[in-house]
Length: 167
Image (tube, rainbow, N blue to C red; front, side, top):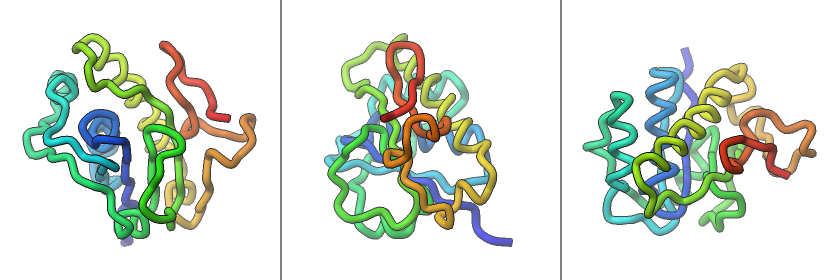
């Protein structure tokens, strides 16, 4: 039996969006993926409001520590999910690149973060429900490069309360 695919979630500070993605994937699809997260300029700690929103649904973030994304991370991950399109990554992605667009919850209240948590959870469910061939690096597709009509649920951004395809 092969190891589950590694999914790396990346955002600017690895304190909010990417932490939500990695924790939610582990929660939604336990044992089916190895979820990790990193940031370009990591914060000192996970956003306390993000931690509280995850704790509300039974996810413990006490061991979570923001960290910097490395070139090695990008070459070993089967799937790299950027939580903001166009991030300047330290090296090319060897596996599949998925670009989502979610706003930075840095100064949000708990109600706002709950909405973001739920929107990210919806995207994570879509990713977790894909057939195994599509979640492996063998597919090696880059969502941001596909025409809008061909994009699936893994290529969306949050606009208000709805998710729309990324162009």
